[in-house]
Amino acid sequence: MTPKRGWARRLWAYAWRHPKDVVLALGSSLAGMAVMALVPLITKVIIDDVITEHTRSMTTWAGLLIAAALVVYVLTYVRRYYGGRLALDVQHDLRTEMFGTITRLDGRRQDELSTGQVVGRATSDLQLIQGLLFMLPMTIGNFMLFLISLVIMAWLSVPLTLVAL
Image 1 (tube, rainbow, N blue to C red):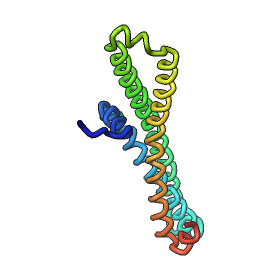
Image 2 (image 1 turned 90 degrees about the vertical axis):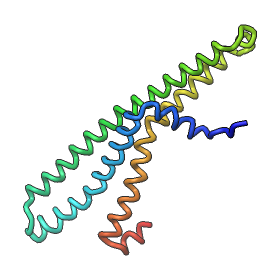
Image 3 (image 1 turned 30 degrees about the horizontal axis):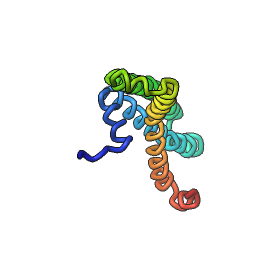
Image 4 (image 1 turned 180 degrees about the vertical axis):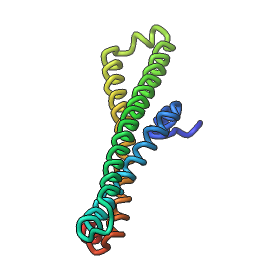
């Protein structure tokens, strides 16, 4: 008897049938959160060096802030688009395999099924999986944003970081 894989591993295997979507959704999410985590450092330079001490040019740093916003916007679009594609493609794969499994049953076994329950359960389960796959890249990106933020906070001020924790 082969050991059963958990639901997350099976879902991961379905997702990897669409490697381009997985890589673009996760990659753009992680890159977008990394850029977003750097925005407070740019703001710090603008406040400390540009406004207070007048040692740096406002144009350069304001341009960097605008560029960061544009990069985050583009990466968010890519994450949402490819995350949505991934979710819909995996949902389609699961629906197709479920239909194939049901049609392989003989007529008597098909008659034993409660059609309404099977269709209702399949629809709700597949919608939950679609929602999970759509939101997963953003959730992973948020964890990375949290970790990067902790590092940046510690770099700026260890005592304040300890207070925040």
